[in-house]
Length: 403
Image 1: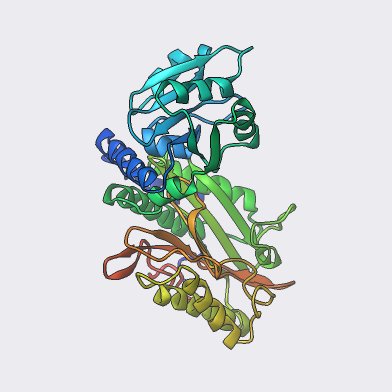
Image 2: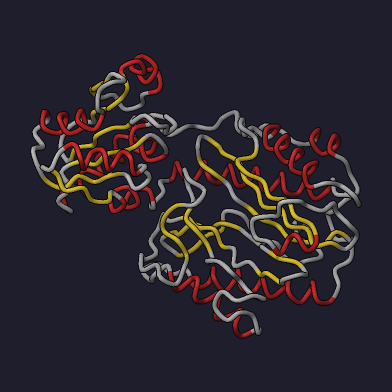
């Protein structure tokens, strides 16, 4: 039997878990202001007069104001010089004041009025009568189109150079929050492995994982959870109707949580029972591909190099080539932070240069159609001396949790 897999139950494992988030420090107002300062410097360098930050993670990153996007325009104007200005429905004014991190003027619109015209009028009122206006890349089309139709004085451009330009480099405070989230999820992965038994459903495992995340201090439980057994594990993001666990099935569990808005995302693959020779061989190929990607992460080289290294190794083992299966059908990894998938990405077209503070998943999954899939996913961040793991990869198929 694979070490650390099976032999226990949910109640026993939950009882062993403790809240590790009691002393967690959220991002403070000083850091939010530093982010605004950095963004304004970039905007001045790139001739962007103002950026619109839509409700969501970009608004939160720069202002500490947490608001979910909806069919109504809620966001903020960040000028290249000066203070931030919020655009909100009039009836939400009192509520947004309660959620506001960095303070700023509030301009409101009534339900029969155009928030897009208000946006343009606000720009004019703060001295921005023309120029390039960056639009948060996560803004829905109806907002960017509404602004475009409201005035022909402005040239709308993507704000990604500003948003990603700031968010891609994590601070020490961000790294610590991410480390805590990932530490929690790895412990939850270990506990989930111990409750496995023949016939257990993926739903029961998912429910346990959610409860375990909460027990360890992730108040909202699992941010997401994918549990797959046997042939189902060959579908990277799951199947419509999942199968219960059987002896000697490959198990793939991909899950994460949120700590002060920062996200974890860890996958473990192992066998429930005794791995056969094919499972052992391909698990080692996946492990080696993950290591090849990690070793290729060098400051100053393109993110593409990481994906290329993993894919070249897989090709040397008869996998692929490219995205063909058996092999890896998707990119090697993604950035992570306030969003589970964010810039930059580890694919062979990504020219962004690796730099200290960048954080990535490393998951060059192997898909063996009609048999099983193996995804080993850990995250690393770039330091001045190169990449550093948040969590240590599985050492072997027989001892996936390094007991």
